[in-house]
Image (cartoon, rainbow, N blue to C red; front, side, top):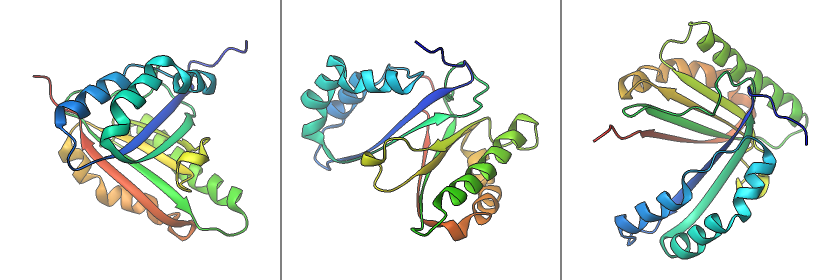
Length: 195
């Protein structure tokens, strides 16, 4: 078995469209059943998807309350943390997914976009990007579940004010590769404060 570097982890992000009539308590029970797994390799993620606990959560809870699903998985390069970014209560999170224009030289476009995201993360590590507290990015390795979106990033902010304040800076970042992107899905959310 090959050992995996501590500086690498798997990001597994799933977007769910919950049915309007779904009871909040059932949604919470379903999410509680799904949470709690950590992935340090593609093999870990594969094992999770066939694990009886995951299978039960999907069949017993999810199928009845979910209208639509989109999943995205990437190997987080150069992660300086022991695990993937774990937002603190009160943090704000932005996840952006990019679908590239279908043209030749797709690998060149991906490399350029990933390079811009790496520069942004490097700036974070050097203290140049003060609004983002943690960041991960990568190329999807589960295309069958991602609706054609092939690149993504996840950025954690200390709070909603920092997220709002970063919109101009993130707009400049995306401007660098806007000619390559057909569409983008952006999801912003807050981590509930401790009760």
